[in-house]
Image (cartoon, rainbow over all chains, first blue to last red; front, side, top):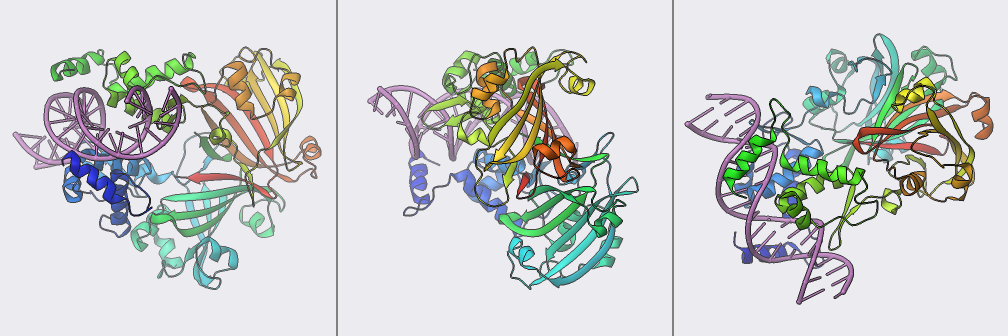
Length: 254
Length: 254
DNA sequence: AAGTGGTCTAGACCACGTT
DNA sequence: ACGTGGTCTAGACCACTTT
């Protein structure tokens, strides 16, 4: 593309007072839309950089920069010699990205899930607000225990938008093995890509104490999470009560 | 630089069985060494991309990629039209990078520090191990309260290598205003660039309860931090006891 | 006007994986 | 041998800041 053409494009890209976005950001946005709309599904190979460059009428380097950022955000995964793939919660590398509770010593080992409840209900005001729903809208409520080495360590209460998770039942959960986000991705086409968490220390109430085999009043780490899919759309609220004797929540500040 | 020369370099870069590193990674390493050795100090302007390219005998694009990564890691800060600067804990943008305790509602506001203790002591075994010291080596111990809006919210116990923080006294702390890491950077030439944290819920003991105006046994969020400077060298151990009523620890999973 | 980082392009070659 | 991503270069122009 000639330089004069480039300049014209750069100008054309801005509307009257509209926000300016570099070409590679626009390409990035187009790729996210493709992912969001399911053009390429988790685990699949996306077109090569040159193919995408031809499709979008830009140079390969511009596509590369867009993909670079998407790979940094874990939406895509590059594999040298093979191509670029849509990230999935099923691959081992992504397995522990959202699991921050680990044993003080020893290996990070997959946890076992025990589902206690799974039913449809109407969203309370706070849950509805977090999920961008209206109070009283249908939600799926899940309660489960995470066991490490046979010991219950985390009690999770989870709320999901009912419209998005039709057909999610206790049986479906019980027969599934692997990370919950893998199930959501494969069975319901909803991929979690980001989450905000708020952590607190609280005293265990009677229910939590019984399920986690503690005395009421024992300190628990409460992790309140809101997870987002493509386009910053909230799709999960989770409250995890964690036993932190022998286990901790790990974090790296960068 | 001619392509044949390039190839020769690429081969020359590998020793016998030595690890391969792309040129830009090597440039990045050289820049980190310059930062570590104080060639450019926090807040200062580093040479332009073209100057660095000339110095290291590579193209500007290669220097750019090295700087890109260092900027992503918050070691450098780019400012369009002005140049690239060494990151500092004094600038507002970096102010809250290591402060994760925030009020549930309202603005993130700077906390007030009240120093309770500052003395030299011999390192206990666990502290020594975390700081890469020997048990019994000199360390500086600091105890302080962080107050938000006049209320004590965090009790921090901090250990620093004695050799690195000669001359750090209670008076020095008391007369200083601003983030602790700013003081460390300016007065002791030690810049914190990364930290690992382990979070737990614990019950307040008598001392913690008194200082934080709680009842003994009240749940507290315990944040154990090890901070690192250039080259992954640990330089601080911190144990923060946090009141999480009205405040929480915020985190984003990406 | 001059200097800096920011974007975009085009083309070369290297490293890796598959055919 | 071929196709993919990964690195490196060179040069153009844009956007921002200071002189």
